[in-house]
Length: 242
Image 1: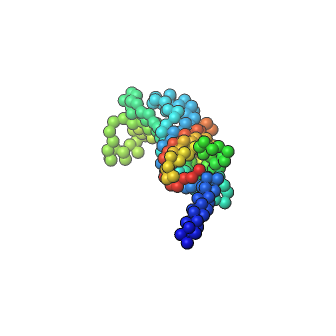
Image 2: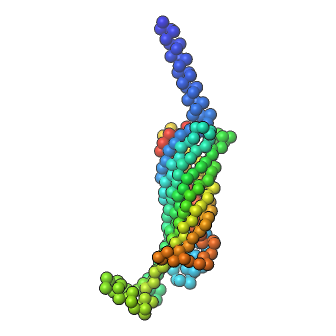
Image 3: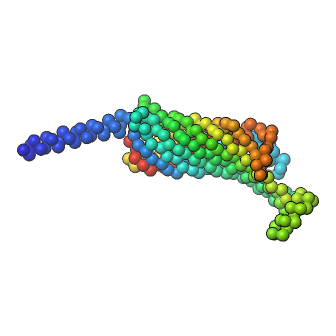
């Protein structure tokens, strides 16, 4: 009886182990999410051409961004995973010219659905290619002012056209839909922890520029739409079996 029980236990363990290997290792399996320190590399050329006239330092062509992402493999389609992502960041520059404090701040971000496929033929580490389908926005804030401000002075300036020339503020907005092809490498350092390195290129669709209180802004160069390369890194927590 003891020998028979021992044989049954061995057979069961073997079957369970085989099933796990088939489910977890013949096809990628898992889910997870985490923090994404990133770098945006948009086309700053048309903006920096105007900034050079305004007087503030030119904006960096690459700036830091943060966000998060998550995904889960869909068991019905081996290698396919669905998830979501959201990233945003900003850069800026300021200076003092002729007694005026001048500043330009550039902000950009996007979010959306991620659809990815893990290439089965690469066994060293999992490589996934896919798309982000979502929406994004770009904001450019331009300001110039001199001296200090107080409550009464603000209201008096609003009715004094000569005083308005002392201070100047404009907020430019661009809202758009986007498609972004991506490639990601997610290396499981533990069954519960994975490291990510990835990149993508956002392609804005149907850009719509507005100024201040939803006033239409015309003749904006297409190169200033906020699209461009982005690079992501991160640490994901979940369950990973590649």
